Image (cartoon, rainbow over all chains, first blue to last red; front, side, top):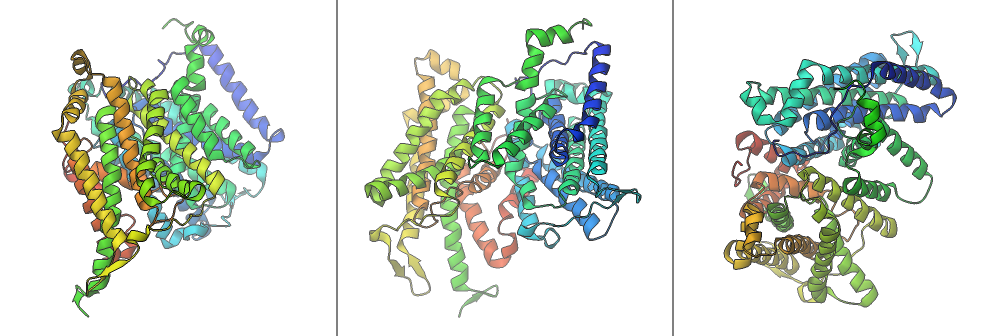
Length: 328
Length: 295
């Protein structure tokens, strides 16, 4: 997309000591969190944060807006649930099965969608995800409207019982950190650089001899697989998989998370997901419908702060002061 | 009983008619979507919500002001068109210089708000809307019963589609519109008010969606969710037809509606997804859509 002007912040490397300090603090906080907050809520936040980060890998770093990521999220939830419930697989294997399923689905949808760019790409992913939704509605293994209920959490590696909430929390936290580390590695690898080059100027990338299609498909499949990791983990946390996770509203939700937090930043989607999940939890007890609030947030976000919370911070004077000290 | 491919003729013709009716709505909606996209370069995700809004304007006019179907046929598109104009002036006009994705995201939020609001006040269930007395009967063709209202929908949508096509392809205003699509700056230099053209275009597209909504009210129920899924089908129709092509949007609207109807006869399980499958196949063979040009 040569004419793209998405409000993407230029990434600057932070002063290294700050970075490590920040990381250590974040991990300490996350480890201590279940003693201060409701663990199920925290696990939900972690799953959606990973989902949003995986989605952002595609939109933020490749410039491809997928409107069909719910298919990978909800699809993986079904695959994992089916594996651990019907085939009695161990949770980690069930999770891997979910990831593999989401990746396979991503390969098919991505193969078709990368044939068009920009806005068409969004519409095509939306339509294909909707097709998957109707498939889930009718396929026998998903149990239609009922979904897969009573998914057992089982024993991790056959020894650690995940029925215990704390064990489950640390398992989800580990999954989350592994997923995030993978995203970090992808973004900062030579492969990630080429993907970003494609985002900036696709024609030039082609002229430099890169097979743009293959790179796009690869990053699409990676994003789908990581989304699957989040979806499978969510199914194990809540012990069910339903149609709700494959709807296009869910695809919209993850876009909102990334947009609200900051597209193209590493932390943005995590902040966005935390905000949205907190908002949903808060509004769940009131009569006021969540969709209206979500829609309004979308509109305000697009009209006023397109960089998102984190993106605006990076762009602000303090943010720039913090990130420009090592002078690049 | 006459059988065709082992299917009773009545069932076949019945589903064909249902398909044609659905196709009429697909055509009207994808036409509006194509017109808006052609000039504004915005994918109007709120199109389904505007369609629902048209039906609700008719319903509310009937309930609170006892205004019947025929006046509503004019008033509902006008109201929805006016709403569209306000939205364009207040918000969309600020997004033209940005990536097109932001237009899609804004209208997505708008759709959530409109649908959420109506769902909040009217619940998720549908409200019945009486058919106009003039068209409530039907004609017996001997081999099948043909409800008059359904014939009216097909005729009305054909008239609307052809009129819009004529307006854009054959009139002076249409020529301005097409020129503004090609090169807005140059058209402004010639003294044509392009921002006004953009506003009018969005209003026109919204009015088309509103008209489809009020036409749909008597046969489908008036429900806050009626536009939710149709908009995605219409997206697929537009991708198959080729995004920039108005004629393609109209033709594919009818054809895919009929295709969907036929699938209901031969393989009902796939009727929900047949349009998406066709879209996937078209993308493999002709990525620009059947009537589109590669840009």
